[in-house]
Length: 301
Image (cartoon, rainbow, N blue to C red; front, top):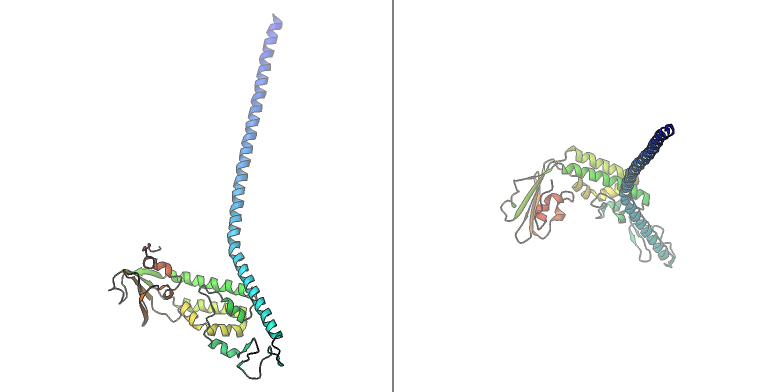
């Protein structure tokens, strides 16, 4: 009787111990599962962050890759042109060396692949040296014998300055209800934009733009380039404008356009045109989508 009484508590204690150990095992497994789940979540967050950083780097590298490809194209074209000139020189068969300047300038020599001109004549040629985004034109860079690295540095500076200037001008542009004479009385969809004068900022930004050209090209080549491009520079930076610029456009029912532009006492008009985008600065064109688009899109805000 005493033995049975003793065995029973032992059995209970053993059962409790087994249950306790089982509970501890389950708790430990649960804790391990929670820890593993947290670890997975943390790694997932780190992976997402890494992917975001990768996408950001790729986005910044994309324009650099395009620029590098452009420079490679310029370099290849320059090398091909140089090779062609060398071959022409070798095949001239004339007694004089056509690669040497003649005694008098200018001169046209049918046997020479070169045209010899005084540098002072270059600014007088009807050449505009810059693209609409402010970068240097490829053929002009070749004529000025610029290295690809010089082109890259210069274009990076010039496009950045012009983008900054145009962004500032966009903040000064707004639609108004008063259309210019010649537009107000025409039938069709009308839009007028008023652009406040840039004031002293225009001169300051143009000076920075030209200083960037001088810094990379030096005084002689930059003087040739800037003089030849005076018309484009004046039109782009609007230094002479002291009054607001007002541009009125109407799209007639037949799909043709009329445009009037006024700044101070100067102005211009175009009528019955199939397209007028060339008369509107490229950065202001989105403001005229309601009339330029056949569907009459909403005015960008």
